[in-house]
Image (cartoon, rainbow, N blue to C red; front, side, top):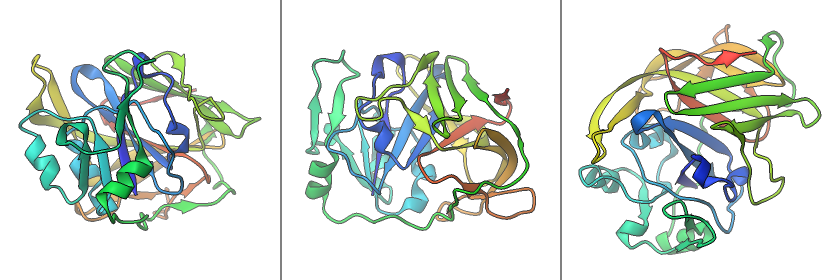
Length: 277
């Protein structure tokens, strides 16, 4: 199993093989921006990118996944020891890891691409998919409210999901533009979206320009939304420890049911709700 940190600014478009990910996390970073973390298990593409740097929240978020290959493009100096000491296999061009190249048709620094198959061959055994407690069923749960356009805003970033009944999925828009991919189907789509409202705190880390790195607190409990089949359902989430997977529960306290296909999980500041229309 592999997790790849990806840029999601306009400079990163189109992504390469983000459409092949099983789960895509949206994480807050400095200056009101966000980054993506893409989980690859059922499909391992030849190339993924553009790859960007890691953050402190990644360690806690991905602890339940076990010994994954965690692929990133460097991090601030104080954070590097914690990344290399985490219970995963760190893979970074800065560490001299193989399996990276520059796509010079893209502007730097948004042109570092990862080669997952080369990386997995080089790093040796990593864990396969873990049971994360996620339940999939093409038959949706009843109820919910209409959710044709759902928008998540950060101070300087936005992700929007637009329901397309014909495709039976949400088209993904990032920062005002439709998200594209170099691989088929070309349009970035999500079958299911989970909005996980979390507490954000100052991590104590930041960039060299004075930007504060937020940390998303993903241990504990909170509220959220489930988006699937054009409808929104109020949910809750629970996680007892770093080793435990997050439980996403419906109003009756039962595991929510996800539509088979790509899942997006937004780690969203609990003080800034998404809009549903």
